[in-house]
Amino acid sequence: MRNIVVLGSTGSIGCQTLDIVRSFPDEFHVVGLAAGANHDLFRQQIAEFRPRAPGIDFMPMEDMVCLPEVDVIMAATTGAAGLQPTLNALRQGKAVALSNKEPIVMAGPLLKDYERKYGGAILPVDSEPSAIWQCIQGETNEIRRLIITASGGPFRTMPLEEMAAVTPEQALNHPTWQMGPKITIDSATLMNKAFEVIESHWLFDVPWENIEVVVHPQSTIHSMVEFTDGSVKAQLGPPSMRLPIQYALFYPERRRNPDDSLIPRLDTSIAQALDFRPMEPERYPCFDLALATTRQGKTYPTALSAADEVAVNAFLNGKIAFTDIYRVVESVVNTHQPTPAETLEALVAADTWATAEAERVVGKLG
Image (cartoon, rainbow, N blue to C red; front, side, top):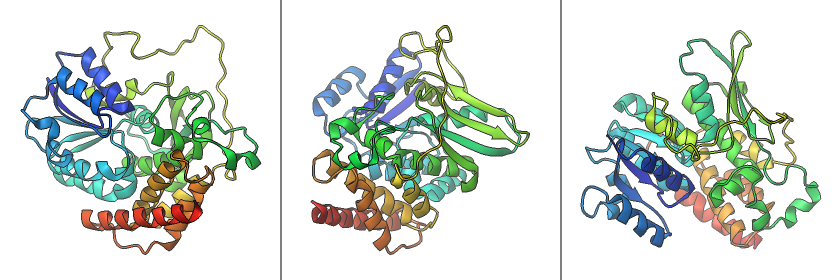
């Protein structure tokens, strides 16, 4: 029996995690749940899963993950909210199934240091890093290259001059994936893909120059790994987050889900194409901005993440144009005064400053 805490339980990944838990009632016990604004669904989850300790559903996330009986934490919050719970869990030697990219974008070196120092484990849940993780199992050979795929989002073929008029409804209409609003907008700007490159750099210790991104509209190949001899391994499957969730929760085992409809299988009986296209930098300026900013180190990645969170929220609420997301983030990182990213306090200070600065820029643009 694995004792699990789900952070962000009412979001897309949180709900799908609980789908997996329901499929294996003798394998998982929900110790704690934490959620944001969807109070009705949260109350339903509390009534269904009945976390073990009375009142645990109201315990702060950063304390909940430290409970001694907890084996694994599904970190599925959005934004910077997941940073402190993730660090606390690793400090306690827990396994963290990491769906929330922002903590490792903000504090990759610190998270890896905690993992090594305290004996915890970071288990990738995001589809592309999970694909890489699955491809390297059992391998002792040198990795020559990581190839991360991107669908290209809903505006892959839209004329560039029309991008400024994009509506939130259009941006939320992803062609292949069903996700939460923040990650869906990040997928439209390809900020999400930059975050996956950053995540993969830290998780797999692969140099920046050895990580590539290719547009793959079908979203069937989730990532590829090229080894030193030129051999390439790929992980394929229909677009579904339940498979990487289940893989992380049962790692190092693979288990068949009792509900065959829950995790779709690759249908090889029908004709289908697998296309690859180069990414257009001019279409996705957030991608290059994010990587250039992150490679500067210090608290720059924290400022990047905070600014993006504010900008995406502003776009979703009709305060700025789609193309203004880049302008907000660029303005914030260009004015950031970085400090060493060696402590939680330094990261929180940078996040607080960047959030306020991004809100100021949004107000100016609006």
